[in-house]
Length: 314
Image (tube, rainbow, N blue to C red; front, side, top):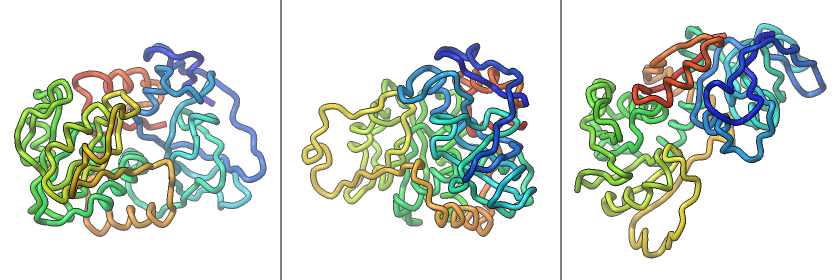
């Protein structure tokens, strides 16, 4: 089969497109014919060597959509999605024509969506939906998304707009050339995020923090009383929050939460797909590549042009 293998950490040139043996079946696992997958920042971090638990060589890819090829549990031809569960980290992932996955992290779906659209959903919308519910959004809220042009930022905006069309949702970006694209995507207005400091005095009721530890303290300063910050991304490439005194930083009536997509709840996943269907949520990818264009896909995401969810068809 054809796959993309990373033999050592580094740039996009370390993504090697080549022939490799098809995975061999084993008890409790199923062979999936991959039809597509979304590309995630965490995979870029892993490629760069920022995931110390990952040993190379490794086929990356923490999510996929496809069909059952061989299984003792599922019927051949069943349409499925899969996310996380150490796929692409502890064992080979979805950057391939076939992937062998533990049965417990395979989720059958009934969908008539094209593969490139279905591939845009699993990881990104699962994360966005978890943040959406944890932020306890109402139609009276004013919301900020830090890292608005990211896949999760755009997906979150789509969820909010579909359910609360009158809610004001703002975005921030370090690259203000994306402002027009962001407002066209549903954001009320866009603020510059300069050196991880928001260039406005405005305060918000809810903040989705996707830049991460580099800007959490600044986000807290922009919360109204009883406001919530949900930190669910690390676009700033800083993993830990140093010199953080919860009592003094949060003080009274400010709430800090998160959503970790590594813990996959099958009920929540089904609920998410149902929500997308019932509210006619926009889920289209911003850009689609082929498997043999994986280097270009990573380069696009890392470039100043990077915007929204990027998927790869196999």
